[in-house]
Amino acid sequence: MKLSKKITAIAEKHLVKTDWKNNPEMLKFMEGVSVHSLQLELERMSIETDFSLAKKEYHAVTTKLTAEKKLREQSIEKMLSAISTLDDDPEHRLNLNKNNLLMVAEYLDFQVQRRKEIENQLLLSIDETRRASDAKSQFLSIMSHEIRSPLNVIIGMAHILQKEHHLKDQEENIDVLNIASNNLMLLINDILDYSKIESGKLELDNSPFDFHKLINNLKKAHTSSAAEKRNCLNLEMDKEIASCYHGDSVRIGQVLTNVLSNAIKFTKNGEINLSVSEIVGNHKESTIRISVQDTGIGISKDNQKKIFEKFTQAESHITREFGGTGLGLTISRDLLGIMDSKLQIESTEGVGSTFYFDITLQKGNVQEVIPTQIHDSRDLSNASILIVDDLEYNLMILQKIVKDWNVQLDFASNGEEAVAMIEANNYDLVLMDLQMPVMDGRKATIEVRKFNQHVPIIALTASTDISLKIELMAIGMNDYLTKPFNPNELYHKLESTINQSLIVA
Picture (cartoon, rainbow, N blue to C red):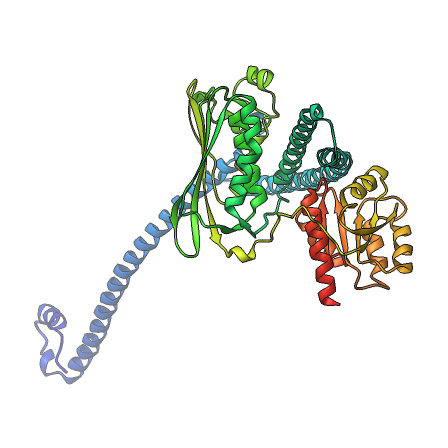
């Protein structure tokens, strides 16, 4: 084996007098030393390499741990800042140490428990609010019945007085009675509708209706009140407007009634222009702009948002001078919101105002529209009808309205009595009031359907809730009529229901 240079140099330096190169034992010894020296050198190089790598790894790990520590400290500081805001009162906030994580965890747990208590209190408050809302709805339902029932008599009597022979100088009095009772009806509807909108229980109808007839009837209904204030009410209808659309004609009419009534109320010796035009249209639908422009007192810029607040008018003196609840525009805005539309205003104080909205309606066929005009000659072919109502004046009004329609009438004052009469007689139709003593209309209908499935039953109700129809159908009623009812509507309901029952039979 060849000796390493380092061992050779050492031997030549210290073994000058010895012939070590020719001494086999010496050479063998020196070869062993060379091997051991080489191993030591390799180990040294390996240790130095390992140390260098370890130093780099240590530096990388240290850098990473330093960054993580800094991020952790920042996170703790943010958490402490967030926790400190949980106390509403700054005096009660704890001065938390970011290095004492146990204290932070305990305080956080305390705040979580506190928030859970607040959440439980909130849920109790929501439940109480819901119960209060239900109580209010129930109260309004009862009041609706109590107000609408006598109002039904007033409107019915006004219709009868107009129909019957009367002195010529009484005509103006009857007209005033009609106007006053209809205005009262609008006020009651506004209050009830506002309650429904507020509670989220108002539902829209989506039935085919004659759009031209709706607009023309609205103009006709407001012409006399406009004339009283020496206003001219004009109508401009776009020729592109279709005859029939699908939608809630009652709610659209209600919005326009509110807007037209406002325009007439705040205008004197001027003009009110009702304009209807198609903005966009195709064979399936139309987007229609309906606007009401007046030359009345106008509204300042500052008050144009204020008028949409509930129970509010532009100025306090306006309430004193013109009257009104301040609900009409609020309800109109909310109704249009439900119909994906918006009531907008352009106005100049002292010059006049324009209220307008755009509404998209699906087109329908004229054949779908149920005819509402009834000829003067009304004949129900000697139909046998049972009228069930606990109020004598309601029975009297119904009797006077239908007496010339060729019918035979029987009367019952409660549900229990009605059930016995239906079981004993063969009636073509039953008009059933819902709220009665002894047995109400719902329970009476359920009892009747146990032995008679075919006799048509129409509910008489003061409720205007569309969902009521689903409930009444489920217990076996065929239809319902809302008080106060229009005699034309009553006749159509009776005629169509009787004819339908004959077809089924």
